[in-house]
Length: 330
Image (cartoon, rainbow, N blue to C red; front, side, top):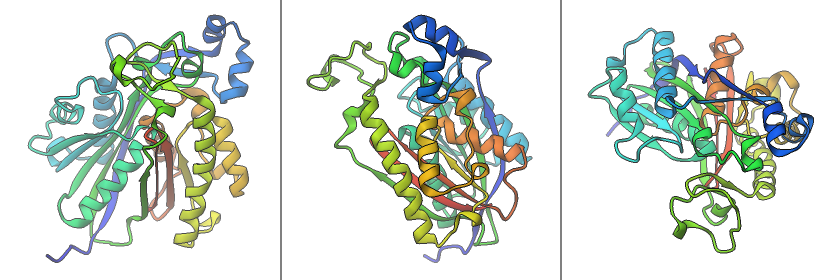
């Protein structure tokens, strides 16, 4: 089979965040700490939380509708919908199937992927490859997590960090093979998975896990995750730059997972990246897992900071443990 000599163009982007804002003052009172202590440890002053009657599905649907409107196409023109999330309401059907139905995308294919905070970058990389293979022509990628739905409100380590958000991107086949993703990696190491996991039953608990967090809620070993993230962020960025030959000045924006402000700034300093090259929104939205990089992309897109012919780098790392990177010519 001869593969088509094509590229992948981003047609549009959209996002959705809940209206509810949870500030540091409320959390500080809950845990008996100073609001400044939370900001110093995370770089966050507020995060968005879903209401009782909204969750991942609603955020995904709103983000995708916004992206379709921005792209100027109808849901019926999609050939595939990929949703990246760890907070889908059901294991069957996939949220992607339900979201595709909401935008009248039938009979487009639809499936979810679970790669935690790396999910959006995994999905973008996969979408580009599927289009270049000739298997698909127009794909919607949605990165979203409603982390508040599986964060124990009495667990300080996770409550101060996570929030809810969704972002969506529409990708379509184009004639220019230079457009789209020109470098990508997707990796995982399952050995240290107990550093960040969501047990669904008592039998899922790791031996020696003394966390008081409820079954069904996120459990995180903060120090282990922090060490992994700081190391991996720098590693995958350096590898990408070396293998592509890119220099920092060649890149319009480094869009990274919004894990923790200290992690982002540490990597930025070690890599020698200018402040205006590394986008950060964690201060007002927290860490929304699969939704974080997706929301960053949409905000940059609509602020005019991502333009045609720009080179953009995506970097992410998260539970699994997983990590992923890609370089795109927009």
